[in-house]
Image 1 (cartoon, one colour):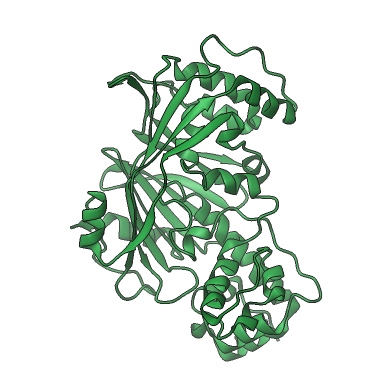
Image 2 (image 1 turned 180 degrees about the vertical axis):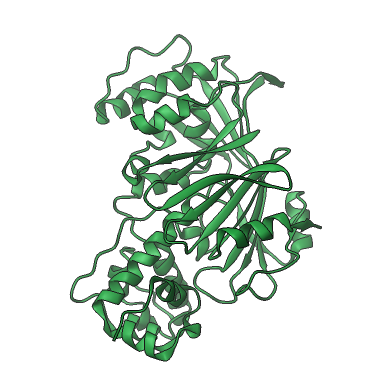
Length: 413
């Protein structure tokens, strides 16, 4: 029998009940297809990784755990009964703890412990299917899950400066445009975490929680909630909502720690410019909200997210160009070259994407410049744009045309 297509394997993740019984039975007993299923899941993880700057991690056990993951590999024990029952039965979650067992954990390279109850099995499977591996992507995943996410962290330290008074602090970064930074997966994985350059202390920790409806989401965040006027094919029912309060952190630059990070990367830095060592930066992002259409699937079919764009301030008077130029040599050369090409006015927010798994292009939403992201296997797409300091994104297991149609048709309440 022929092997099911990648599209069919993708549907097994999103909507297993919609896959023909013959295909489910074949996949459940075929090592090649089980390997392909793991690979399709890993590809999906890269597609969503680019969106995590909009909505912090752990908002949803399905979509928002899809961070850049290492490719899983199979051993002889990994095509076990738990996965076979899941695939053959067309269920989106197992009915008992045994169905989220160690074999399935190894299949998706999650490293998470087996769940101890039926409810934990459901949540565990969602994490397993959505999480991908942790080994090779640990540092990049860690960067994205910090109290101030990547775009308000290392990205802010590398994109220049402006000057606007804010009490005793000077605003030295404000988001006015978004630009993709495309690099090989290996380079993104080696990007240092922000605390590799100093001390990062949360001031307003990330607080993510569910709310009842759009009105509650708007009240909690002060943002206009996007309204989808027409759902694309395959996306049904009302959304659920998650909100996040404003988050902020204080970063103190350390020349000694930066020198250690540089040495580990094989780079020798000169002494830091006067005033840089010990300088403090206040990083702020949010609030934000996300609407998710999942209908009980492990991975939501579509999300629409909106958040206040990141800003950064300093009380030390050190220009951001100084910090940027000092830190760029520590980064992979191809990433550094792209960031160096940004203007020095501190208004461009980098959007990191994996060269192997994503492609990006310029577009517009209602006349506003936007960035369109599509996975190279055509299973997922997203569009991200910035308007008056507010970042909005539409993403899902959709085509590029579908996410653009949703984005361009959004209303608000």
